[in-house]
Amino acid sequence: MGSLTQEQRSLVIGTLLGDGYLRIIPKRRDALLEINHSFTQKEYVDWKYKVLKSISASPPKARKGNGTRIAYRFYSKQLCELTMLYRLFYRNNRKIIPKSLILDPMNLAVWFMDDGSRCRTDDIYLNTQQFSIEDQKRLVKALRKLDLAATLNKDKQYYRLRFLKSSLPQLRTLLKDCIIPSMKYKIEL
Image (spheres, helix red, strand yellow):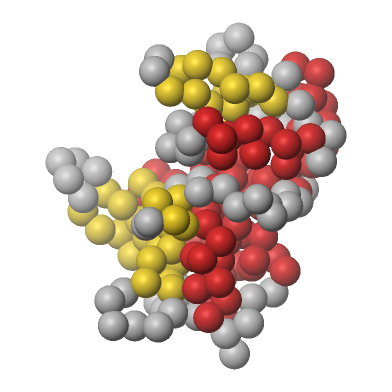
């Protein structure tokens, strides 16, 4: 009980690179993971829940947010393994990229489903604007280990990662078995 499988660990790491976050509730010992997306991404949240069901506190639920937004979310149980990941991925309650980050096809796919985008020019991006330039350079280096080349691309006042066109075939190969059907539009699989 409480131990993450490799698939679960990869999903959590991909989620931390993207939209998910870990937190430690005051006066509690271990961290929990929150998965929170728009209700329009219900299929994606349900897929994450299916993978993480054994460590989840309850099934996903819809929740009315600010304005007209309806969120669909669930939480994990508090686990010591999540606390260890919290210590790797957070400094002063802010998400960072650990120096020890190793990407695999699953965590890359989850990260891409959370934060990937494609432009009309067929450029493919990872929206990493929340990370520092140093952390984004660390991500570029981690991607190189999967034979993927990316550069920092200025998006208004912040930077994000853009894959070089020469890396797109390799990116598609790595992602094809891990991306769920409703997210394939992001990469044209």
